[in-house]
Length: 174
Image (cartoon, rainbow, N blue to C red):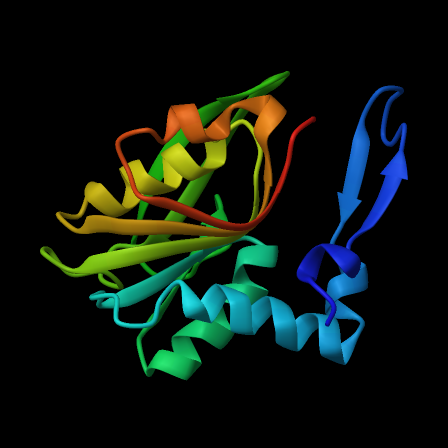
């Protein structure tokens, strides 16, 4: 029986020498791979108490929306600044070479709700921490982070040490 990692294509030295790029488009483009990825992520939510799922742009939308559908929960979009039409809350954060800002609709998450944050990958944890701050800024609670892949060498889990973090496949390097 195949595992999720069997569907991930690794591309050495992309985008720079020394990086092992883990390409999930091969998971998405294979019906069996995509089904397996969703099934494995869904197992982490079985019996877990939560009120909503938030997905970060853009691959978090793919996995998060399917999981929200399966659990009949609201799906909250976390987008790059300027993409959402209604009143938003914003959170800026630092990147390796600059900064970024993410937003969500102010009224999509209610105070006291338990939110699962879903994305395809945890690397440095910067985007994930910014997403947590965004969710918490409206009085909600981050119940769990759920990622398909983890790059352990970038230590993102340490950034999120005060949260429950679940991953399906973990790679040792960067």
